[in-house]
Length: 394
Ligand SMILES: [Zn+2]
Image 1 (cartoon, protein in one colour):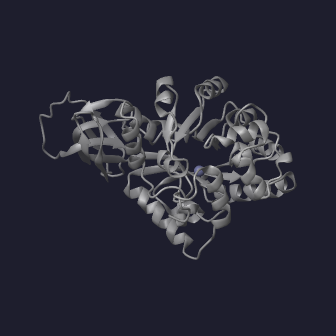
Image 2 (spheres, helix red, strand yellow):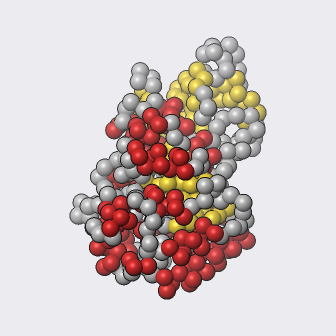
């Protein structure tokens, strides 16, 4: 039994000034008390100078790229087309890959991440995920260069799917992006019925030439794909944007995690929200700054009141795997977004996106969300400071 308190508790749903959290030895919340800011009895209470937030949900990562830190030089490679060119030629499978994946998993635990939506193209990360204290939803990601390879690609994804199911790990087969999945493969992915409603993740509108490619099969991204052997004749790209292509194929009732959205416009947001109420907009700001040197219009999404989430992406395009650092990047660039909204994006919204909000995402009785303490908080502005740091309390 522990009783924990701090200057503020952001439960994921509300803010409590000097509230008290009771939890048992399993980390399960047994009681949350709103003290109205006045703590009368301090005995057996752990009081912290800082703010408490629930364990973070990282909705986009690629653990199996954990060895690629610094391999793609973002001073010379500018933009996603160049990045894709490099990642296809530089991706390797070194002997110490398992060690690197293990380190990345441990780093996320240390930084208060309790659940991850993680992309896998191979089975390299499966055993580490199985043995981790982090909850993983694996997105088995499929793409291919032409229709001749569609069956082979899908069979490989199915094999990984069954392997993960045997290991008792949650997973789904997902498309990589609108531009790398031929019509036939996209239909196989969407039609794969393992459960009533699935969780789908897809990279969306990460670079401006993605929409050019979908509309006219031209632009920087089209050039790189052709160079890499993609036969663009096999890609039909229905719709007027990469977003429309994705939604053309995806099922309305599935949870749809759209990743990046760096170049999504107001009309795209409206189009997607009209299509389904299960859209989750995932932002990976540090990866966007690394690859495209720009950020999505994040305040616009908050203004629209849509469901926003946070991801770290991978070491191929980031220097750390920390949700706190992603939030700091947002605060630095968009200080007008209330911190409470950012906490929701990093916790309860992510938990809903991954369908684990029965256990994670908010500090409420009956849940085991993980408890993080953020120190060096800016109480004047009620948001993160550049020096804010994180410590896992439970
Ligand atoms: Zn990614």
